[in-house]
Amino acid sequence: MSELSELDRAIYEWQLDVPGFGESGQRKVRSATALVSRIGGLGGPLAFQLAAAGIGKLILAHGGNLRQDDLNRQILMRWDGLDKPRVESAAKTLANFNPNVEVEIVNANVSEGNAADLVARADVVFDCAPLFEERFLMNRECIGQGKPLIDCAMYNLEGHVFPIVAGRTPCLACLFPETPPHWKRRFPVIGAVSALVANVGVMEGLKLLAGFGESNIGKMIHLDSSSMEMRKIKVQRRPDCSVCGPLK
Amino acid sequence: MQITFRYTSQLATAAGAAEEMVEVENGSSLVDLLRDLAAKHDTDFSKFVVDKDGNVAPTLVVAVNGSQVSFEELVSLDKDSEVMLITPMSGG
Ligand SMILES: [Zn+2]
Image (cartoon, rainbow over all chains, first blue to last red; front, top):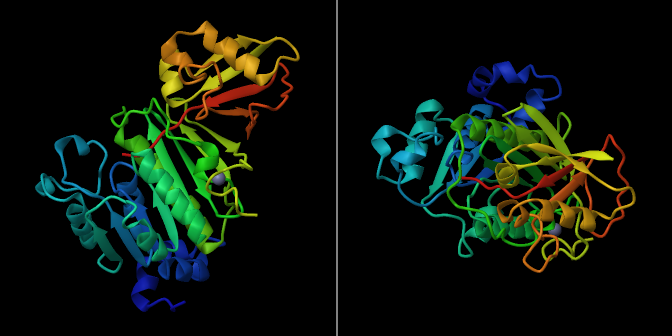
């Protein structure tokens, strides 16, 4: 693990004073690589906040061009990036914000062809993808490679964050053993809700990386911004889970 | 007795409310409870709870007082119990 530079100390001064986090937590975060699958309404603010926290490197995977109807929630994007790859907008925004965070962009969604390599190069993975096929693939890779996965999701005024650690917690396939038949790709959501869920996901990731606070691995944190209530649900492991069942 | 059922995401939209008081008989199994609940609602709601064969939908997560329960479990409820029915969400 590398030492903090003078520049690091200057940038992260306010959080170096957080009890339990401090210099050792910052060094762990600064030495870590995070993979963010999709940088839309969830993954965008999530990656932004990881950059602010001083993550060492971000790998951002998201295919396709920016559309007008992305702009109610995808705050890493830029108006001059419309009709151009979303990852390019994201890279420019992050470089303007803090050029001392390394950003690798992948103009493709997570797929069978790239998932193993992307997960292998990360210390922690944040899943913010809309399609359950992608989410299950990410889950399978993270369980197989023993990488922590922070599963983040939203709908309407609600969201949930489910931190998964291979061998220690249930996995996404324990929670949802098959593709939900009635889920629709296009769903209602307000950008502030996706950012709220994203920030909860970032905190769970930072706590795992830096070893401070109280981690919620194995629990689904459910947020309802309509009532502003938060509930934690202890998730059960499925002994016959097709993904994590073989792990002891 | 009356028990609070809490609904999330698409299920809450279908129910038109985030919670509902449901009359539950002492000693009823979770599967019977869910089937009764599905029968009381229209298909927009019930499709998230039971599949077309009448089995509990595999992607429905049920939690009682903050812990997920399996459908086979004998769950004892009292008047202060909260049953939460969670349907999937994703990113975007
Ligand atoms: Zn599993």
